Image (cartoon, rainbow over all chains, first blue to last red; front, side, top):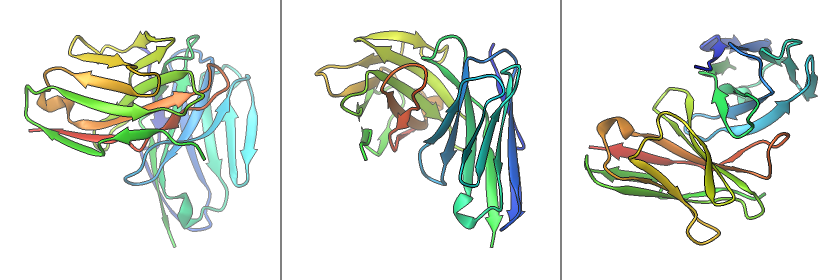
Length: 111
Length: 114
């Protein structure tokens, strides 16, 4: 079945260091979304990528969608303690009504 | 900012009992979803709902599960005979459309089956 793999599972960084999480799909995706879940909270939508090779930025966050639309990454520059949480990618196939979530990368930022 | 509201926030039930989880999606959204997250694990798709019918469901969403939009505002998930392994956080989500629309998730209902 469709799988979206995400690595690493955990990442501990010092405040100010960069962070990247990677997402890979076994099949070509139509689009991919990224969510952030704070401890004890619910997933919060960050962004959606649709086009092959697309790059989008939100302040210190940079999102990329691979050329083959099978992988994606989220990069955070100069992490802050407010970045703590679990980052999930969620990929959709041709049918936008179902997103397959990756297993998430739990980010811990030490002040 | 508009929110998806879920009630109750925590439900404890005995194995074999029926539970109904309630959600009020954002009012102008057209697509509704249920996801679940077992503690510490990934978010799993259960079902999507559009135009008063299920548009897609996962293998988790077996005959024990059903969804309903009884009155045009509430969106409910019913589990007929709960099992221990149904214990999880259940998230309702809604979106304005397909394609370029993110999901807005509710804060979830933590279901504990004992």
